[in-house]
Structure formats: C-alpha cells, structure tokens
Image (cartoon, rainbow, N blue to C red):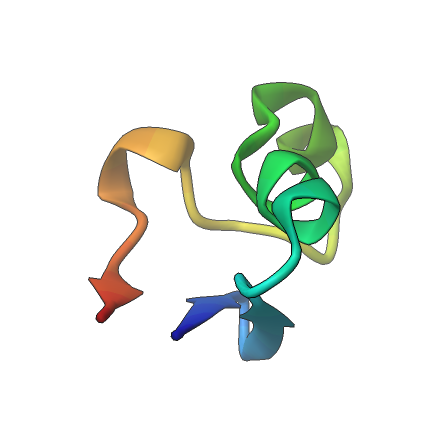
Length: 43
C-alpha cells in the first residue's frame, strides 16, 4: 500500500513512514499542499 501526497509516494509498509506521512506538522512544508483530512489512501 502506498500513500501519495503532493505527487510523492510513501510506502506504508513501514509504520515509521506512515507516521511521517500522516503527521499534520509535516504539512507546513510549502511543497506539501494536501491537508491531512483530504489525503487519499490507496489500499
């Protein structure tokens, strides 16, 4: 399973990567536009 954020794909097989991907604080970055509530997870 992968989480795609701002055109970047995150491998959700690692819990650490998952935490980083869904951490709202990460969305302060200018190159990360989508908000956590609008994330689409492809299972």
